[in-house]
Image 1 (tube, helix red, strand yellow):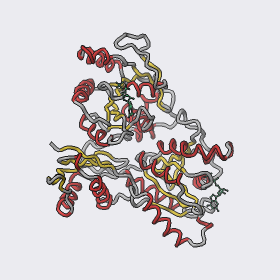
Image 2: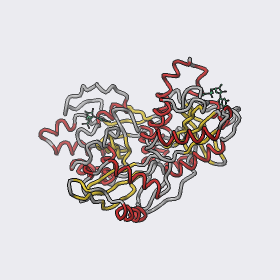
Image 3: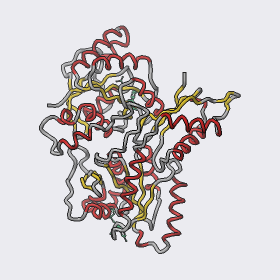
Image 4: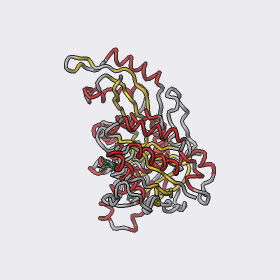
Length: 466
Ligand code: GDP
Ligand code: GDP
């Protein structure tokens, strides 16, 4: 029962911070004496519904950093040997250092299952480091911020993918059955062959969250979608006590729906909800692949809505907008044009967001909403082959090449897609630092258009070409 995790990586990547996050200790707690053997070698840790032990390697490197690199290596090897799973941690903010590669070699040689944690992912400029981490050959880097507690749902999924459902959950759980086990394993499995364009997988449950201001109509929507009579399945084990998920299917497509404040509104006073809703929304967002932003069409686009949209995009999730209470609108065509214009203007970083008018109360538009969700999910999963990308690049270089900076023209060598969910591209170029943001935006817009990826975040990382 249970499994053991070792957090491995060079000094300063954030291993102790991650350790503390997983075992639930306060970040300030640093009572470890470097290099001293302590008795509490493993600590019980939890990642939502996963329970495991983390091997405490704190202090290993402090002792080593001064005089004993060999010892650091040795201790790391011991931890690796003891572990069932390695969290190989790199610092996405600083990018790869030679030590990362040394440690990665040790880990790779061990043959143990590995999850590649790209920590400090919330930091400015972390995208480059994150994509660089692919070079380690340890699979897909999972962007995490140990300090801010971000990216943990994806880390959970990656653990399950690395270990398999059975080992991840031990023997006694899992009413969900093998059907899920087989499909869940595919999560995080990505880009073995950069030229393959795997078919869209519609067997996994599509995870949706519904967010929005109080009274936008979230609970009405959810009830309309799943049917009033359906009993909610209650809090997900260990996920968040106040978040509720429902399994359901739409036209044969499996859906996992997360709701937060909406369904609990009766239990709480309104003012409290006002304060909670962004925080609540954030939790739901991290669980979801697609996030429905519910707006009351009679009072659309307030600051909080934009804040939520921005969060969704920054978290790499794909938004779909539902303009609700459309039954109350007398000038639908005019208003729709206005709302579409506003959407594009206020959220320019994600062009072509799907926006659907609905009436949760009458049920009008709900099928179109679900179609928009599935369409967006496909785009969010899309993969473009390296061949196509580089033919696209040829066109770009011929018609709108990068500018010259200080008299020298910037060169772009090639482009590959390093990631899906959302699509992330690595652009290999002569001087990443000199590349103007405006040109990167141009590339992103052009990619979006050329490969038909409306409404989802697109990430571009610049890398030096040697
Ligand atoms: P270790 O040497 O690998 O155990 O790294 P620590 O956990 O001691 O972290 C090294 C430094 O990175 C500390 O200053 C942390 O506050 C910082 N750090 C850890 N995690 C994060 C993160 O997610 N984001 C940012 N920006 N800094 C982090
Ligand atoms: P939540 O706080 O976002 O969960 O919002 P609710 O689902 O509780 O809805 C808030 C209020 O708006 C309720 O009085 C609903 O009956 C009403 N409402 C929700 N959807 C619609 C709609 O499509 N049309 C109209 N006219 N009222 C709606």
